[in-house]
Amino acid sequence: MTKAATLDQLAEREEQVAAARAKVDETKQRARHAQAEADRLREALTEAYSVDDQAQVDKLTRAKVKADARAAEPWAERTAGSERAANRLQAEVDAWRLQNFRELLAEIEPEAHAAAEAVTTKVAELEQARRHWHEVSARVSALVADVPGINQRTANFDQVDAAVRQLRRDIGSVPLPLPRMAAIAALVPEHDPDERRPRGRTRRDPGEGKAMRVATTQGGLGISSGRLPGDCAEGFFSP
Image (tube, rainbow, N blue to C red):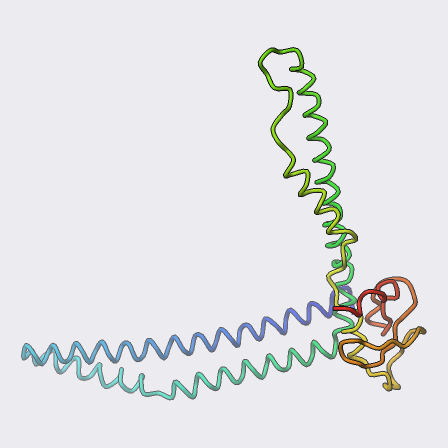
């Protein structure tokens, strides 16, 4: 498969589900319209009878017969059928996604790294901007140092300072927007003889109490090959 081929397949399947959901909405809208038209003609026919307008009575009676027939169509069953079809498609997509989750994660992994790096870069840029603000503030203070009646201190920046510093402390090493190790490992039972596993140690998941293999190799997720990210093993088993 070419790059992102599995993600493209997923997008196509999800588009089919979206089209099926749209058909459900369209069917409901047609049912409402049919009922509204029948109600409108019923009211118009009643008014025609009230003024003894026989020409309108005849005309509206013919229209009402068609509208009533349209409103009486099996709209509930039609809607339920379209909903069932959409749900069936969704179930197929969910099953396909589960079957191909390794390929999907492997394809999106580069984007996950790029997203994490972008956050790191923006935080670094914010810190650089904070320092630049203080450099400019110092220069401004120096410029007005001998001017009578002017406070040498520029605007209060303490809150921004504190926020940027706290952000740097909180963010630390930006995690990848990828599943936890335990979640991936739990999808492959320890006894599965067909699954290729990395060399590593068995560790018990504190949340599930299940034994699982923790990879010790370095690198990315290696989802498509069945490998787990050894450089992410520690710390990913706690919630």
